Image 1 (spheres, rainbow over the protein chains, first blue to last red):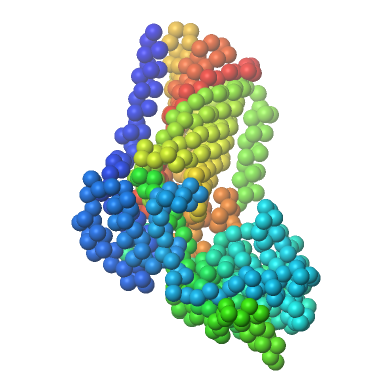
Image 2 (cartoon, helix red, strand yellow):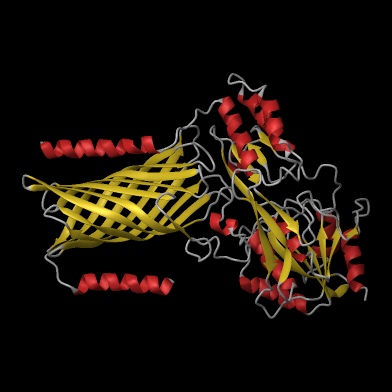
Length: 353
Length: 259
């Protein structure tokens, strides 16, 4: 009997140890949820200074109107004031995880497109440039579901000497052989239109991999300033040296990168990686930005948050989170459905000696 | 470094196979437990859940020492109090121990956790959905045999001495803290994200990385033991923002090879 008692006492002792050793968990009431979110922004957000947000003052001001009795909707609206103050498409607040959101879910995101006209039109593209009827030779790489595409590439009607590729998202994957095949094709052309309009991001590793085909030597592209601790000055810069791809198909020729306001996040990564490259020209509309790397999590009550926890500053010291202007600004004329002015301007640029 | 690591490992297991022993047992444990997790870098929420656990190992007793190895796999799921999002945990670990006999009942020595991979996936998250912690550590171990009647009760405890760890998470981002602190983050370096990739490992002292393991083993019969274990880890990548996790488990052990 004695041994059973020893065993049971020992088990009970150790089983209760974790409660002593772990930190206290606050209740998920409105004030605690508000404080948790305000603290996350204060400690983790990577661009408070650049965005000119005084988070302490703003939090104190909003918190004064938060009560534990207010409804979930009212509380969400209070938290959303903090979210929107960041003016950052990466920094969101949702009632649930993104995959579980419905039309009725509470959602707050900064609209990066507001105030910008359309700079890409699918009908114009299909009828004049990339549709099967007008351009049967164009190669299409579908995604796994076969319902959307990862890339289209080839040449455009009437311009056999200039390659064209459109990658509408970086939230995809390519086999190395596919990328090699693509660039082997580009290499034979005198110029390349690399269209990333509508590309709102995805995997920055993939975007960087593509960028590495456009350089022939190690290239300093800027630095990413990461939040590494809770203090206002707790940042550390990671300098980025872009290494050329280990490939025989590097493309050192003239490149026109087509951009619009949707160019965001990993597409910005692709873009800033090419800023120092002399032969690369950006054509189109001001890009969206989104230079920060993103962290995410759940608040005490299960609401989803995401925040930019770094900022990228390019090789010339420019802050990029609010986007960047193209070298050649072009508007899309939606009344003329026979051509895409941005593509046409890029063709003129690449055709010039 | 990996070559040295593997050579030492092979040497240890070979010596165990080559040299004779007074007694030896090979065992399989199957058990269930209650796991817990709290990462104050991101939230004060505590996560709890049920975990299944399997251990496979060997212990051999020689004239004046006890040594053996253990392969452990925990698989579980956790949720916090405040919401229903869940996290799934997979935690394989391989360890080797060597204890010198101090007196009839007491053994003291070391346990080397050769490789421990703690992977935690949280549903619905993006960049922070996966939390990976890969480490190798050395602990002091004490083991005390209580022979009550004919049946044995063995109590052992480990306290971590030093660890070489890589957590693919930092104060604010899903990359190792040391990589960011050293300004070495780069999208072209795939070793940063890989749990065993060379970039991002850091040596941690016990005051930064507290590891405690206890075990109470009660012999039900010659073949069967009941084993209760409590494992706790607390580390701080950033001061005052600890991460804590662990497991309480109860297993039934079958000693299927006794010599």
